[in-house]
Length: 209
Image 1: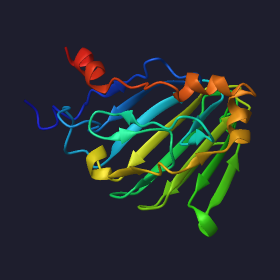
Image 2 (image 1 turned 180 degrees about the vertical axis):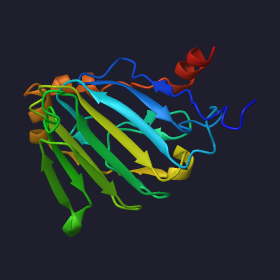
Image 3 (image 1 turned 135 degrees about the vertical axis):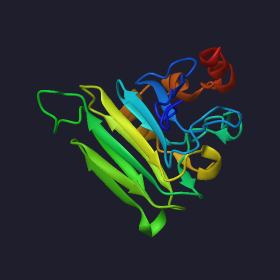
């Protein structure tokens, strides 16, 4: 066996069940769940997801909506702003318009920080947002969609356990912002987050069978 025989790594595909409107599955390099095989020599965990329509991330549940957390296998998740207590993270937004690489394909509103330190980035062309350790990030609203958008997340550790992701479960979603993504019918929100979309263990076992 050559010295670098293991350096071509099979990524794992995390699929939402049911699939969320506006988003395809996520390819993952690194350890998402304990017990999952991964390349321990890699210095980073990388997630690659494709946005396929208007979408929102870490936007919280609307006022009056039944709050719930999702079973992510080894930790509890959900559509809330997050902190990475164990690492820095960079989120890269790039377009797929080969005729104009400066066209992101949608409009992004990205919230970083909280309270007096919060800053809101708005952009329509490719950007990379650096998220320092312990700084809250989210919500992220993606609107005016017209072309697939690729989002690449790069962590400075290679496992979710080391990243120590903490959710801000007390965050209340902004109804107006949510409606800018899904329209005025708030019942449509349930198609995004009304049911637990992740079956991590079964999904990975199927891939590795």
